[in-house]
Length: 103
Image (cartoon, rainbow, N blue to C red; front, side, top):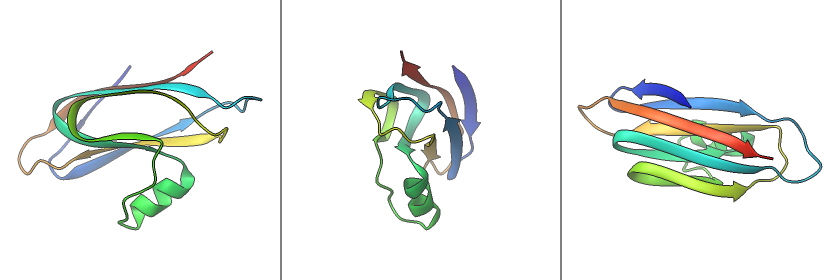
């Protein structure tokens, strides 16, 4: 499980590289924060949209929650990104996150 903190009005991006498989990868996505944050699990195109200020198309994500969890099957892309946004004006978010592949 990873840990990070995000200052007010800041964003953190975590890149995940997966080994290619014959079948679509099944992942468990979990994020826990001490204050509400917004998350997106995206591919390269979603990251590009996010970088352009657009709301990205995403595979999993939650708006303004402390606990985020999803069990999902993804297209067999090599790279995914977990975007975490702290929209608070004055509080730093303390976060634990985990994205793992199910075998």
